[in-house]
Length: 212
Image (tube, rainbow, N blue to C red; front, side, top):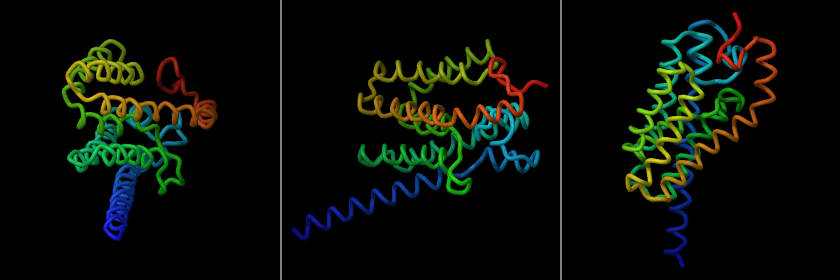
């Protein structure tokens, strides 16, 4: 009984440690910091109102948008790399909490971004060859549209479809898909706030930027 209690306590400690580490990494507010540093604005109050790479790209500058993407992507990749050799439950607990850290950062009173880049970075480490195919698809779409949303959707769909065909375990593919579904849920939850910001800033959803 004591041995079983010891194992259970160790599992709880590992789970808490995983969740806290992943959350803290995910909560690093790259978009907010960059926008404050470069233009002195709260990224959640300009453009579309989202604390993410696309908003920084349009409202702060292309270079800074790509820098934000790399930072957010890197958060997810770092957490996945740390836990890649861990049990499956621990890997996906880490994935859920790196997303939650980005989406609900304590430093910004729990108003963060949607988490697409962060989940993308996490997923690339888990299914790298599928990510290559997703990256190729996104490159084509970006060349044709120069827009983040269709580019992101193309990358996700291509990678998810390719992953099982490349031999990745179904549980891994389903879990990665689940993380991307969470980003969609976060977008839906953010919609009322973003609509208010867009009405004030003149963000044009059809063009993917503010009317200037």
